[in-house]
Image (cartoon, rainbow, N blue to C red; front, side, top):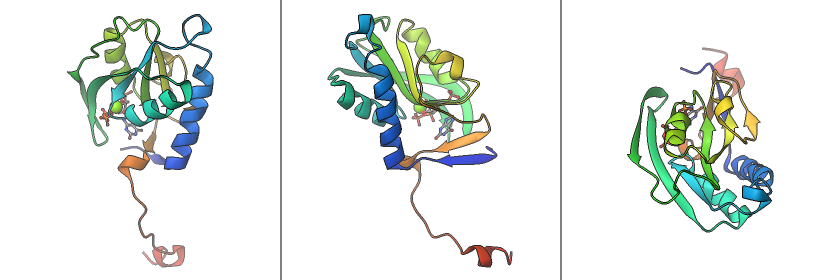
Length: 162
Ligand SMILES: O=P(O)(O)OC[C@H]1O[C@H](OP(=O)(O)OP(=O)(O)O)[C@H](O)[C@@H]1O
Ligand SMILES: O=c1[nH]c(=O)c2nc[nH]c2[nH]1
Ligand SMILES: [Mg+2]
């Protein structure tokens, strides 16, 4: 169980994905455009949509890797390999975050030449990423907007009564 949570709103995610796009816009092969984006589903799908819009990239591929059940890590399972990105040269491999690096290690074994980008990064997985935006500590669990919804919270005075 994580010892703290970092809540990301839709607005913040959009802003952070655009910040990632700024870092990637001139980093394509030879300074030119990327051949395409490989999204690691599911978490990479929404970041890929935002980054693709900003980079005017119309070619989106996916690789599906299942590593977690809720907050519990398991063995990474590739449920769909990337079909059309070769060894990844000239492609962006994009995910929402890197934590332990288990998912990215699996993805990089399929696309060793891809440029790896994530929106968020934790220290253990950071060395696997070429470009990211925000680092959070290893004991922080990032709460994404698609996993959460606003709900009632008791007033502070009431919660003090136990
Ligand atoms: O660096 P790691 O320790 O591998 O953790 C990061 C991965 O974990 C999450 O995926 P998850 O397995 O939960 O699947 P999902 O994207 O379908 O939600 C997240 O989207 C990353 O892909
Ligand atoms: O929603 C998530 N938040 C995280 O911090 C995380 N780490 C691995 N997988 C994760 N999924
Ligand atoms: Mg994922």
